[in-house]
Every structure is written in structure tokens, then in C-alpha cells.
Image (cartoon, rainbow over all chains, first blue to last red; front, side, top):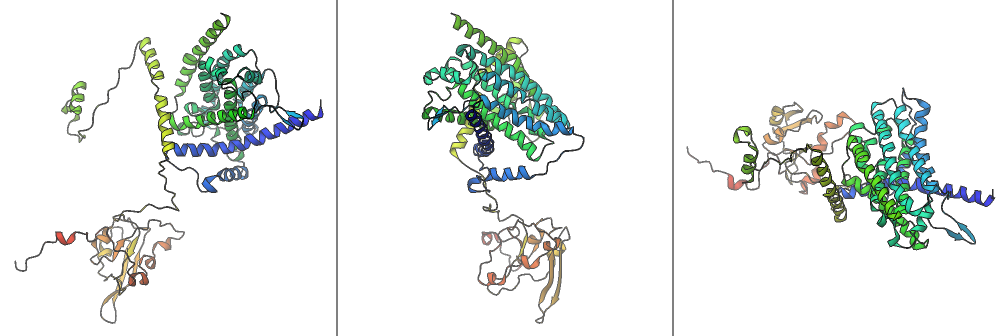
Length: 329
Length: 215
């Protein structure tokens, strides 16, 4: 293999790891601020100007805290579970084009780690494998709240994989490719070409499933603080808990990127404006995650399953059939 | 009236409410009958989905964010004023200008204290005037009922506004010097007159009934 390619790939991996770990930290700050403003509070104010250094304080705290392994836990599994969550979140980022290609001197950089032709399948698969984080962590914790959370996590993630897959199927049929870059070029013509206009149902289904996959508020049953404490994270502390957290926030960012690229036109024609547009869309989707947390209550687990199997899945299937008929005629 | 209408609709008479004290403004909320047929359940789900209540929620929190009507008090930097009738840590007042302690050593506060936390010792000074030689309030025992301030005939012991009474030592909870107004503040008139529990109300003059000289 070409040496320059290897170096480029390693640099890209490191940049993505650093940027999104840091963004996960900033994500917590934004979440606390946005939630606070929506609830007429100020949020973090004490560390640094407007509480900006709160992230640094939290980081220092998480990194230097004692690594507690409680009694009766299955030690190796307990230790590896948070790593799975964080790792799968970042692995999913490998197939996401974060920006249009640009040139440094005469060297063209493609800001995607691996432009594989099954990009979407890979992302969905790796995010699906992220289930093992909460699953193993909860099972190994020797804690009944963690166990309940694990059962919920397994049910929710596996069920909503179906919705994610089926909802993407209709746009896939239109684009005819699994690569996210092909999706982007399909919508490069401008706002009118965005898939969200031709596939609004698929878009809504995908966003709903994205909330379930990341375990965010309307479907926050995996770690529902008021009934099962912190769910699978109850027994975790310090950096292992921090890894769960980074994984959750990185997942939110990546789901936002995937949604923006699949349905909202991605980076468009690849100009600077397009790149900024993509960042704007991702920021809005991330803000939407926080917004709903301030506004909406959680649903019950049985309602969640009802919603998945009796409402969303039939709609997704009907959407695919109608798309197929329209394409054939 | 709305109240009576709803009562009649639901068949609730006065008898059910009985003698319970229920505000006139209370009314029974209409609860729609639970759907039993599949079509009923389906149409209810459809109605709830399309009614857009979720978007109302989103709008409300977004509006609050842009209004930026923040209610946070940044506590150590900002403090809320407590009302004059708030019963926090006691203060011992002095007479204005002369700076003499108002306390005449009558012992009423010690007598009335229901948690037995006030203790005083008195003696006669060289002018044969009663003076307080020892005065302690065990704030660890005090329940801040305010009886001492109410019973004090001289407005000497009052409840101050100091509510931050954390300490590392139990002994710090018996700090007479800390309660007493500093002498320079009394002489310069900086001491605030107490207008809380047991104090003379501002319009007291108008309410005083003159005692006839002869019965």
C-alpha cells in the first residue's frame, strides 16, 4: 500500500477521534446550557466565563477518579463494556464524509476515513453492535436496575434497527447506492433535490429511530433516572462511565451527520458554503436532540414497542411499497 | 356557575363532597370514555398523533429560551432578601447613641424558651443597676420559634436576617459577641431597628387605646 495513503488515513483517524471526543465534551456543555435556558435557569456558571471551563473541570474529574470495580461484578466484561460503546460509536464514523474534498497544495484530501461502497450498511451494522455496550455492562453489573435497563436496551435497539433499516430502504432504492458520497452527489443540485422532499415519511421514521438508537429523551428508557437510576451506568464511575457518555454523545453527532447527509443534502456541491451548510444542519439536528429533551416526556417501554412494531414498521413497509410502485411506473 | 354545572353533569351532589372544605373553584375534569372498539382505539391514536401537542411543547420551551427570563439566583454572589418576620439567628440590640445594651436582664426569654437553649446570669453593678454578666443561646438547640423576641419588653433580643449559620465547631453556635451589635455601629446609628417578630408595628400609635386615668 502507498505510504502517503496510510499516513493520511492515520491522520484522519486521529483528527476524528480528537475532534469528536472534544465535541462530546462541548455537547454536554451545550446540553446543560440549552436545557437550562429552556427551563429559565442559567446552567453552569462558575468555572470560567459563563461556565465554559466546566468541560475541563469535568474532564479532570472523570480522568482522575478512582476506577471502582464493585463486588460481585463480572470483572473483565464490566471493564470492557464502556470501551465497546465508545469504540463502536467512533468506528461508525469511518464511513461518514464529514466535509467535501479539499486540496492542500496539490494533494487532494477526502475527509472520509474509508469510502466503502456499503457505507450505510457498515454504519448501521456498527451502531447496532454498539448494543453490546449497555447489554454487557448491565448484565455484568450485578445490579437489578442495570439488568432492567439491559433488557430494555436489547429490546429497543434490536426493534429500532428494523425501523432504521426499513426507513433507509426507500431512499436507497432511489439513489441506487449504499455509499454516503453517492447519496450526497444525488442531492447536489440544491435544496429542491434533497431526499427529505421526496421521502418525508422515511425522514421522520429515521429521525424517530435515531432517537431510539441513541437512547435520547422521548425514548430514554435505557437509563431512565427516575425509575432505574442510571440503568446500565449505575455501577460505573470515573472514566468508564465517561466512556459511555462520550459514546452516547459521539453517537448523537454521528446520527446527526448521517441524517443530514442522507436526507438533507449533505455538503451539497462541495463548495465552502456547502460544507458550512452541512455543519449548520448537523448543529440544528444536535440542537433538536436537546430541544426535545426539554420539551417532551418519556414514553413507557410498552408504548415504545407498540410504536415500533404496530405503527412505525407498517408505515415503513408501506412507504417502501409506494416508492417501488412510483419508481416502476 | 361552572362548578354547579359540572357537578350536575357528573351526578355529584353536595352530598358526596360532604362537609369537606373544597374551594368553589374546583371542578371535575371531563374524562373522555375509554375506547373499546378497535376503530375507536385507532382513531384515538390517530387523533393524538396529528393533534400536534408535541409541537406545542417544543414551541413553549423555545419561546422561554428566547425570552431569556432567567430566574436563577447565583447564590454566593447574589442573595435573596429575607422578610422582616423571618426568624434567623438572633441579634442583641444596643441603645442608639449611648451604646448601652438594651437587655435589662429580666430573664423572660430564658423563662419562655421552650427548648431551654437560653441561659443568662445577672448581677447588680456598682450603680445598683441590673446587668447581664453571662448570656448564651445554644443555637444548636434553638428551634427558632421566636418566643424570646416576642416576649422581650425592650426589643433587645430580636431575630436577625443572618441565615448562613454553618460552622465547624459546636461551640461556635453559642456566640454572644457575634450576636451583639458592635458598639461603633450602635453609636453611629447604623444599627437597624427590628421590624419583625414582636416589634412595634409602624402604625402602632393609631391603634393604641388610651387608658382612662380613673376607673
